[in-house]
Image 1: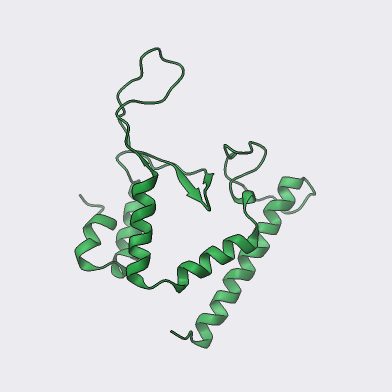
Image 2 (image 1 turned 30 degrees about the horizontal axis):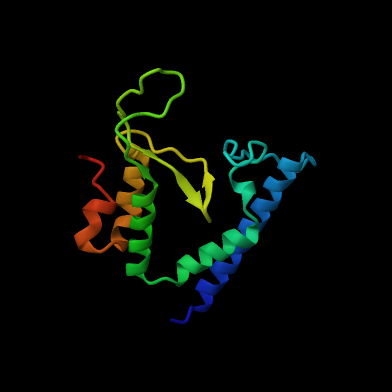
Length: 157
């Protein structure tokens, strides 16, 4: 499927913005005095680095372009696969402070990008109100009708 000129221009502009953003964040990590941008918390693999600084701008752009190249059905299955593989469904918590582990009360997820863990938390009961509203208002129209309630639940419920 060929892109229109406007879509190609938007992709280039998005790539350019992403490259600039990543450069500014790497300047902050290096302490060279560039514009200060808040970087997410430390990553488990390297506590000195923020989540976004683990990846080069080229990796992020390549991942984004590969997702744009997928058809709609492939994207849906890709996202559902990521969500199902990232959910921690254990019945007990994993805390070293307690002798006996407590029953899990919230859904927890581990987010990974290119097999590297990134900082992201889904509050109970699975999705925040803001995220539910966003999915319902902006993403629902792109999801097949038989999967809309699964992927984009109604925030009123």
